[in-house]
Length: 249
Image (tube, rainbow, N blue to C red; front, side, top):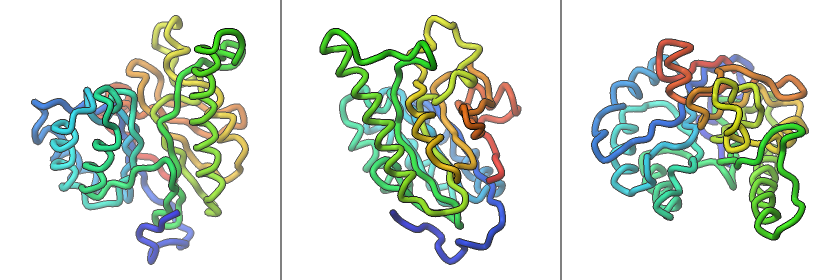
């Protein structure tokens, strides 16, 4: 676990979190987000990027985003999304973003101004009674194992955080609430309840942010009542009239 801005940690005050997902940066997106990141730096204390940062996981796309992120002057944490895996080089995408000062969550958690941050990409699989179980063909069991592995990584990272307030950063949704608005037929492909199960094992989670469900709903809650925010740019723009969320933590 790493500390960012450790000198400011433990002051007991709230911080403003900016969260955004699904930028889908393409090779034609040069300088598209530079002004937005500068604006966010004036309004928030930390930025969380909720996956699908690139459109196809190409190194050039990551480089374009990294260049724009240099306009961001506040600590930035991120998880990758499914689009960032498309070219089969998520490690290279993560490396490029790390070079621009972004902390990629997953195997590590971080503390920013007294607030803990842990995150994973997450996975699909459905919600509640509609969640896919590990029964039948080996391919089904492998699929469910992938979802369980992401939930385990999230739980392990959250367990390292002893802060009074923590934030879980995801790409896939942990609850059905924030995917409502999408066609019901694709709900199982937008997230899974196993992520919420991991989150609800802890009492110090102040907020969960995610993306992926472009036509979903902005706010929801886990079964134990932890606030969940769908921060996909399309959802934030429709709900907040800006492409990112600002959340007090």
